[in-house]
Length: 418
Image (tube, rainbow, N blue to C red; front, top):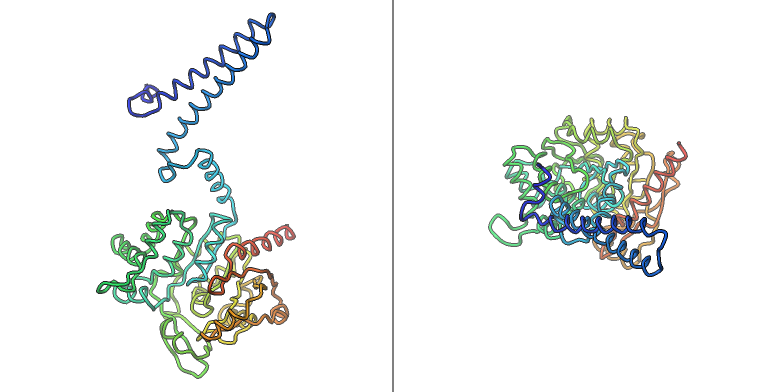
């Protein structure tokens, strides 16, 4: 009886069943006719039979194609207007990406979200572990006023991994420019904050936002506790809060978290334990990359992991954080705050930055990171270099070129090890 439901009015499938049946009937009729006339077949009769056979196959193809399209329209509503062959191709691509390496990227700010834009072209098995120490702008206000984790870096990572329509992505990034209490807030930050209040759980709010944006992979805060970044400067002074630290424009001696014994998000530890490749950076060294690693459980999980660990060294220095830093300085500071066994390879851009762009950055107090790679090698670390620069008004890594360089090296190392 279930079969006859397909004949109900309004389903739009009966015509294609009938068309398919006619095509099959023609094919069978031609086949039977060909057998009966094998002894006295003429050229004209053969041509007519061939034409009927082709027409029958065409009817069957058309009927099946449109029946499948009806199923696709029901199960995959976001892509109704795409040709069927494109839908099949997209599905196969997604399946292929689902077999990609399990990559965990740790960081925050624009550095991590830029990296994620490249990773999603190579695998769907992505986990972004995001620092939650931001105290500035919209995130800082929501953290203080609504007692939630700062959502800004998490929002940027969600949008970077999104497969949703551009309108939805733009909506999440929309920043209010007027309105009492709204000015400076982004819609995505407010959305995540509201969801965390509705669900009573920040993690649930992120998962719900992930569904809205149809992201590839997962975005996870490094800890679910409200933590504050504490900076100790070389002159002995101390400052609390990410924004306050960067505004000091003084050389840092070390940074720490308050409370120092905060616990890691369980999902973050699980992702690290199952990772094939772990990537640290690019991004602000003291305020994006290192804070996640100050969480003892995360640091120990990375040390225990069998994953290949890469550290992406920044192209430019950051005013108030890494003034006059070289490539080795980035590595040295990272290891001083963590453990010498934390990474396997340093990834360095070798594409030349134009003198005009260097001059532009110098006006802002930033400069080119010196590539003293011999010092890095002397410490026993691998170095992989390549032209992974993207200049579009600012100097930053090209996300696709960067992840391709890392993956090529990772696969080469795996082949040698195997």
